[in-house]
Amino acid sequence: MVLTNVVIRNAVMAYDTGGVQPGLSPYACRQIEAYLQENFRGPVSVPDMAAMLGISAGHFATCFRESFGQTPHRYLLKLRLDEAERCLRETDMPISEIAARLNFSSQSHLTTALRKYRRLTPGKIRQAGASKSRY
Image 1 (tube, helix red, strand yellow):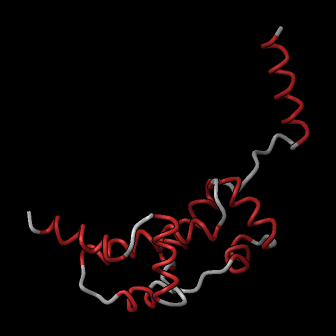
Image 2 (cartoon, rainbow, N blue to C red; image 1 turned 90 degrees about the vertical axis):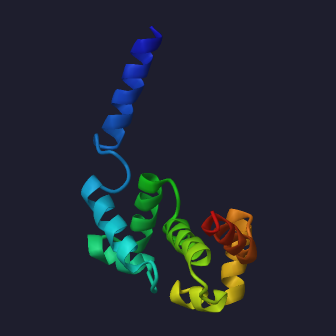
Image 3 (cartoon, rainbow, N blue to C red; image 1 turned 90 degrees about the horizontal axis):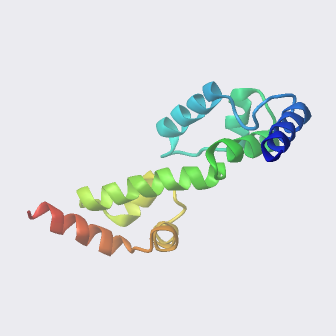
């Protein structure tokens, strides 16, 4: 009986949505991921990505979240923070230059984002990179 109810509920949900999975198609996901990997260092906007797929910015943002489990902004921020950590660990580049290269508005903005989302300061990240390179 329970299994029958699950099957019926899923059939109704598929009927309600036209049988179409919510979110972006796998092809669109790959297209957007490739675009972000290529362009995350520069200015990236939701309207530009939506235009690539021929849909509205609002619809794109909703579909992106359904497909990736996070907002476009959060996804982009993760890419930038990953690159910032790599630069801090592997280079002696000044924090202000890293921030500018990754399109953060300032060194302070980068530092605040690292503290908020990674719970680390640039100095701690750089220190960890230096200690790894000694061994």
